Image: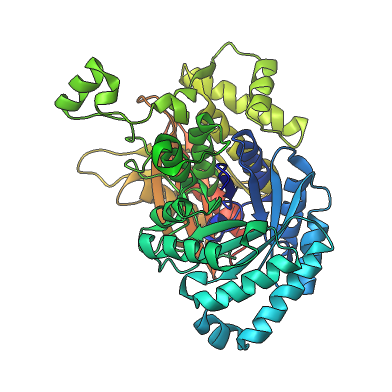
Length: 511
Ligand code: KIV
Ligand code: ZN
């Protein structure tokens, strides 16, 4: 048994299936560059046959990335596989991941197919995929609720047809660790050609056991884990990459395998994904939560000061917490700014975008002495949206609040170049600001989420605001960042409105 554990990241595909987490092509490429820097083995970039936007995104990621394999998902249909093969044409290393359901409930109720027909379709799909690439992965959707004997038959057949990775998804998050580990053990033992493929797992978190199930599978011989940054994903999410990687690294004595991940890139990746998707990371989240390495109790603090390992099993710097170094300041020039963006893997679309981002940087550096990488990511996110989709633009805001008085907001925005002014009162300054904006734009959208996060530490930190709006089945997240959180809130609201009305294709539009 090999001691290499392959990390397959599906943030850009399954992660994107979280409502409101859809990303543009540029956003996907930025995240893919960070995943490559982190040395992820396989990046699942999307589902090319699902939309033109997703096709273009997978193609852009495939063209941009050199050091990770780029994977596209395809149903077990010839047209899906063809689209995926085309999207991956420019990849240095490309994988087609084809899937079909194998559980009795999915075969009867969803596919309305007999098991034999499913098996034959799976073999056909792998054969089609092999015409495009040698690197073919097959997934038995809902394997967690499938008959183990049927799984043995279908896996044996698709390995014979040329699948090199066999994925066992717990699609609905139903498995428990002991049983799931036993299933992997059983499959590896029983399938005569199991040694000709890498067995992989893909666990969802509906019962909060995605990571535990994945790790149990690793203990029983799985050598690829499919996971996402911050555990993003459909419903309750997927297994969190950072937890899998750090569990295996920290407990080598138990797992006897390791990954090639550069763990110092984990926190930057977490920040980037949360900034782009607007899904904040809870403070007590393992590895990447703001409190993950904070010792509050006096006894713990005393112990850590005397000997760090009394209470710490991992070092914060090993997962990239110390990467939040001050990189630029008030006196930094345009070249230093451009160089740092390049080091962060950020490429702006044009000189115009770079100039606008640099102007924002200067403005921020005047208010805030220390500019961190997270600040740069926030600036660039704002500029990417502004340049791509500039329908609504924030111009100025005046807010008055006084104890005992109703807060009042007076805002100026531009809508397609025309200045508009509006005023409103509200139950708080943010409420007043949003009401003022709505009085002008009349979007009629429902506010699903409003959240504020400090981007870095200190009271001079920028606040990053996420606003999730929904209208006619379309759900979008808008982000805004500023040292003034009411201004950040207004920007986030306008960015969400931009996305609601945008004609730019989001890769996974959720409509
Ligand atoms: O959860 C699932 O079953 C999937 C497959 C397509 C791998 O995402
Ligand atoms: Zn999934």
